[in-house]
View (cartoon, rainbow over the protein chains, first blue to last red):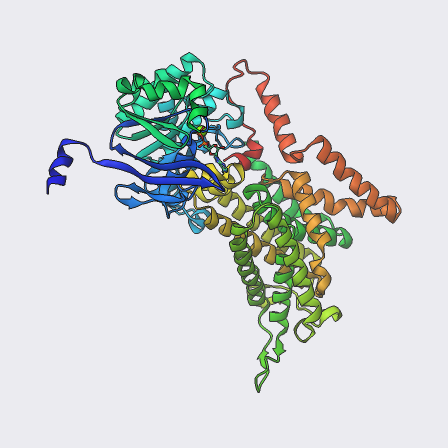
Length: 269
Length: 350
Ligand SMILES: Nc1ncnc2c1ncn2[C@@H]1O[C@H](COP(=O)(O)OP(=O)(O)O)[C@@H](O)[C@H]1O
Ligand SMILES: [Mg+2]
């Protein structure tokens, strides 16, 4: 009862990472990680290289089985599900390294991302009854909208591999959006972008949130992180060292040490 | 537009060919080349679109051939019971469909296996699979007659008004039948790769992790691809066995798979027309060379042509021609940013 009352006051938790540990044959990539992502918010996961951020993404989206712990998405345990099942629940990620279908047109990249929104299977494809044509038309229209949303509408017929780097990063997000995410995990979306492109990306992420998509963001660009996050979780050596609003994080001595004091790491190890 | 019409112009040309072309030998070469093109098209679905190299593809061809031959001839099998199992000869088309089905079932098995073993292991598994099939065909003499071969396999038939099913003994008619099956196979692959299913298959080839991250069930689509591919190869095997009317274990020889791979790679893997172009080239090359060179030299030229194509056109002939055309179209325009996707190779991209 009281939990329900509380739920009306604060938004429900979309994702709950509970006591997750990941060991790679001796190496501890993540140890006892616990945090929550409230629905409709932007939560950022930051930390130095090798802190375990991408590993956390891999665990949440089913690409990696954790050594211990649970991932709950609206109460459903994700740790036993395959990546495609998890995507079907609305949990979709992007990749740190640019990840697109390079040999396909930009439009078909997005159409491929829309896989779950289609129903056509082998017989439908071969016999092509009318509804298959209708479905194709509907998906193509939606794909055009998504390209519009990220600003790639003029590049629809271009081979994805021929796009400029910044455009490829945008396409990566468009593909993820095509999969109809409710929770979107972005792994360093602004990596390698120039300031104006980063600015554009900040706008895109905000608009994604405004559409009601919950966002879990990994990013090194502090302007982006501090500008758009509701909550920031700081990871170092696989351990959460701080969690809070951007303001508190910026003044947290542990965080400053993790980012600036290289000597401190050796003392801890 | 012309690129869309081109395949149908080609089919129309091939369909009227027997009207003026009466050279039985050329018809024979065209027919057997056509059968191999169908097999190459089926391989292309796996190799070109899904990105899985099956070096045992001839196994599906051979399974289709043997199954269809055995069903049409009938057989009896001592299964250790009191009475041997006896199967009466079946109508050829039933036998032919049985061959497709059997090949598809084995395709399903290999597809399930491919889920666990990828890359180099998949290549080894498929090669071994073809070798095992050859051993079975050689040694299960009760069923397959082993190296003595299955003989007197009945030809396929066609239904004719007033006459019922007539066996296809004439070269012209069999040629047209192979052309029809070839067109059907082409349409099947065309529709498949341009659909949601095809996009999933191509996604596997392009970026498997990304495919999974947007909800594509990799195993499922890999299995669909191997089943369709194996069934189509089985159909080619059935066409072959009822044409040659004899089948022996040599049908499982590795060189046949290699021939199919060469046809697909030189023509352009992952393109619709690639296996047809590569198939015609390497189906006819040996015949042309036979008249002009000694056997040793023939094979050297064969290899040299292959190497030259792969060296200069690594994507294959069809994508190269496609690029040439799109470049010609592009030049008169000023707006270089207007994308002119190579429409001929659109099978690979959409
Ligand atoms: N598949 C793997 N096998 C072994 N070690 C790994 C693997 N993936 C990541 N690691 C290690 O785990 C640690 C965390 O990596 P990662 O999650 O990529 O860090 P981040 O994304 O925060 O930069 C690093 O030390 C990395 O070398
Ligand atoms: Mg990372």
